[in-house]
Image (tube, helix red, strand yellow):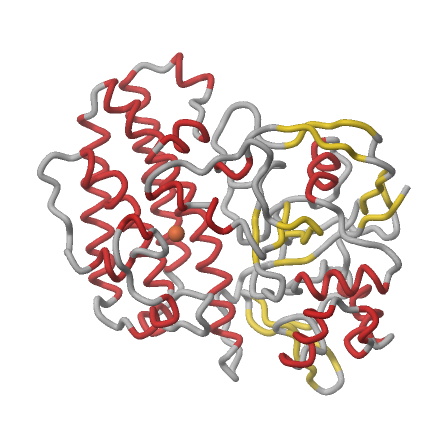
Length: 414
Ligand SMILES: [Fe+2]
């Protein structure tokens, strides 16, 4: 559990709060995050909630149950005397990848779990919500100190799944010929438009990583020094108009623009455009959370893989920023729309920071064991919950992945 102690520093103001205020604040945070999950699930029918469109995407019902299992497994079982597990079978069904927490159902087969149904999952959520509320309510100062870090990582974990609920259902809807809308009233985020404007980064030694108040995941630490030399980072995100120019110049048909694995993906997957794009009567449309919409040339490109982002950058005569360049630029306020629109691929492989050590035990499996073969994305997306974005946040996906809200900004040499 030491990674919780390391990564979840108490906020400065918590020292000034008495136990009553702490209990009230954490009970309120818990209720708010849990309610947001249900708000995101509300537009989805029980049929929507069970579908799994590919091994990487999980059913909505599974997300709702798995985030609940997380609190039951890591908070309630070990901190509530005589806690009654809601259903002994759920640990097998809803454990994701925590080997130390026991055996688990195969990820690609989550969509076959029609029972428990959505109502039973709601009952599971209510059972755990009530138990957590009672635990917080009755906790003395010593117990609060022990459980608050677990509640905090559980809530941040649930927020990560809130984003996945939207990316995963959009992928499911993209398999449906009638292009359903998750929410017909959904609007894309407003963005700042600009082109070809690069910000110079001050050359020299900078610090990156999470330092200070508030929550962070263990992979954002420790703070360490990096050398930035002769780097410029685009102030603006790459737009659909720019991507269309890449396509019109044969970007998807020019092997010399692509990494070897990327070109293999182009050929194998038949990529000719970003994910969810389709041509109708000569015009490009894309599936959004509001259903099928014309591609907006001014909007940032979305649903591109690392391979595509890298090929685009090569076509443009540029490259992707490293994650250190991105973070330094973000901390200096040089990036437009750094957060809340699209995750931005960097050219950095996802690996441990100098001095990083994963914790012992099941929660030590949270991030550390994934530090191979994936690339880092920075910023946050339109699906990221409020309060979950920060300059040090490290998201990571495999290079061919494009069902996330993923885009890019370019970098150049000074
Ligand atoms: Fe999870």
